[in-house]
Image 1: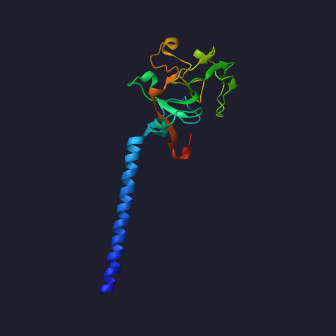
Image 2: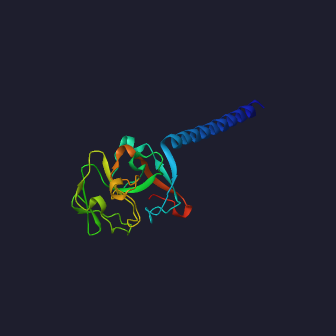
Image 3: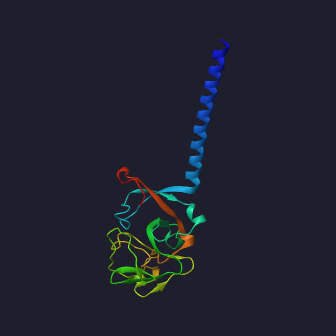
Length: 191
């Protein structure tokens, strides 16, 4: 009779321990997501076909505390730090110190053709990159993957009469890196 109670007590202790570990893991996961991640909905067609309008993405808000954005990263930012504007989602093509120019509709970084492989590489409008532009120490040149409809670093408030035209994006205005498409489920994956 005593042996049975010991076995049951051990099983109950294991079950309680397992439940406690699950609750702790869930709590840690919630804290990490709450403080270091956020979910955003893509507004507009600028990132198609990579991220369609209305799609939800998971954004890592912490990563750029440890590293700088790299060419090819899809970032979210507030244009010109405007807290009232919606988040813009664009792809980094130029980093601080890079020379950027758009020639015959294609983007060149330090004299080399930059391609994302999305099929929407050519642009009708060169904007501020018509002449070679050298990025400042905290500036990033960003483009939408759907270049013909994207308002991106080619446009500045002075050239487009739009206070939300981003121009080259300052590091301080970058909110994070898109790490995962989470909705719709059929498009789940890394952008």
